[in-house]
Length: 154
Image 1 (cartoon, rainbow, N blue to C red):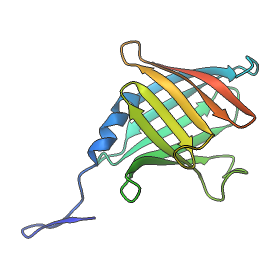
Image 2 (image 1 turned 90 degrees about the vertical axis):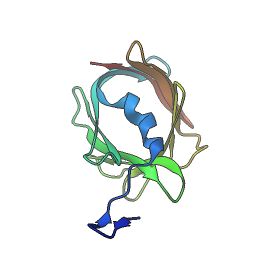
Image 3 (image 1 turned 30 degrees about the horizontal axis):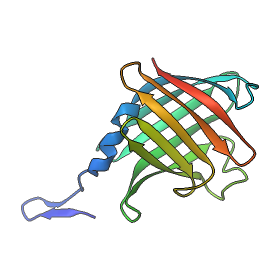
Image 4 (image 1 turned 180 degrees about the vertical axis):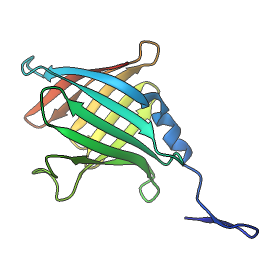
């Protein structure tokens, strides 16, 4: 949608107010975690920054000791009236999708939920944001697996 101004022509729309909930995620974060059974520890870095214009929060990640990298674009989906994202990995789309991994995001107070695919999916992240400590503590779960993760702002 584009607004118009008779004097200057078309203008870009303003970012949806729901995007402001993502402000708490901006910055660089140290990631530490392990599988739900305590095995397979991992570490990495996640950086989130707003694209100019404020319509998309871009998340990049790098896992330590691994060649896994990716970029995720989080924005407001006007058609579905929700925060959605697409994740692009150096490993390609993977076995779960044909193009990019898609997610639905929700922040309510200090609770962060991210569903793979659609809201209500059994593949989801649930976590708690501690704004004073600069941490997000939670876990990804999906049928047959998952992992715990702690992100600390650096």
